[in-house]
Length: 306
Image 1: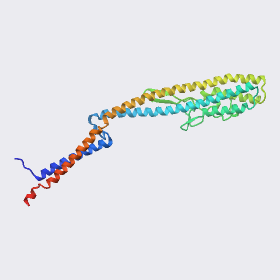
Image 2: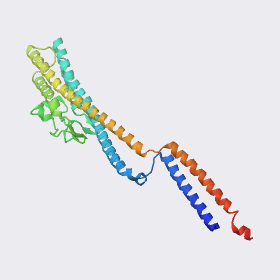
Image 3: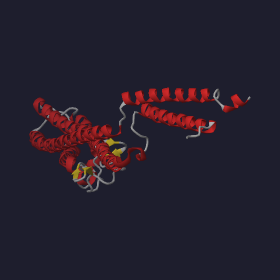
């Protein structure tokens, strides 16, 4: 014979109510977060796998961010090299035009302007750091501001203040790339020519009609300027090759990240339809448990004793 007590009935009904409330809370968390659990404890045995996946995901994301920074720097370098090539090419065109006309009126003003363009390209900055200054990226690599300043130096090499440390970037676990160039490597051939032209102008002013000696001198500079521009163009080509490689690595890393995201999603994302169903069922259970407790108030033995 089993004894039925009012206290026992209440206790059983309350336990059912608390269980239903707990299930409702768990289902509500799945609905609101759209995740199976909010901490590793809730994932049980799969928590170690999730930890490893998240660690790999964070590492790849770090490489992606580093690669995007490198890509932005290379894009700025491309613009700087184009501007440097524009300065050297412009000087060549100005001399060619002077040779065609047989006069040098205003030639030195044009040469000065193209020297400034070349200098601006070599003194380009990215994120407030000089691109071609090597390790001394806080200081401008080109110090000669004018052709007169350049001609006053012992040699064109003295116009450059950069060191020999080139920018090196890590793009993934085993890939390190030398992505930086130095101002003197890019611009010294062109600066030699600019300096020689200024020195010639100081002894034989380039103004007015052109004599044979001046014609021969300027004609010689055309070939030198072609070679100097080719030097700058070659650096631009190397920069473009680096950009392509960085883009390829970034594409591969983004593909890996998408695959990892899908793997994590399968393990951590909650079935929303199932969570909503569980939430509705738990709410029904709460209502049923509450009704049972309310009915127990009417069947107490105290009612019969009274």
